[in-house]
Image (cartoon, rainbow, N blue to C red):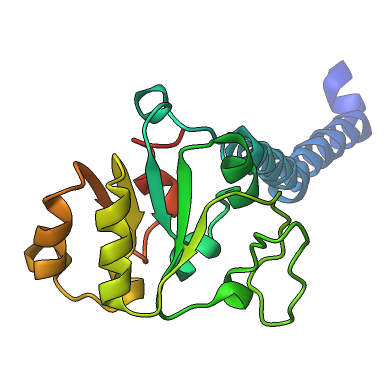
Length: 204
């Protein structure tokens, strides 16, 4: 006498086919859809991280640190500072003891900061910003004039990029020795590194 299972082979065949189809469908999902979801999630996390970084480096949040808040600060406006996200106009307009020095290899049009109560819109400007009158933006025609300005000002802190000024081996140069005689804090930034990171002792 035949058993019940032997009398229904089609039932077991159908069950086997259904199980195989389910496994195959899951494998297809694992291979094609799930990694895409993970990739999308990773992209969203990366975008969120970039937003946080941008907020941390937002120029409008940059201020002078408490240590230098009441100190006189001279910034040499060479190309590294001009191309950074440092809010030059805002800082100068809100800090009476902050002074900008235009180096010999640049002029007022290159800098784009106006001391005459109107914006500089020259096509050659690297930036175009308005400054109220009577703020200190000094210009020197040569390196001797640059040193003389600093000697007269005797700022508590000097920010410069010696590479922009064409000064090789700044720390061992006579320029560095001369400046050290009347300036206590000198921050010489590297033009190949992030400016804001290097000037953190003065700005935050």
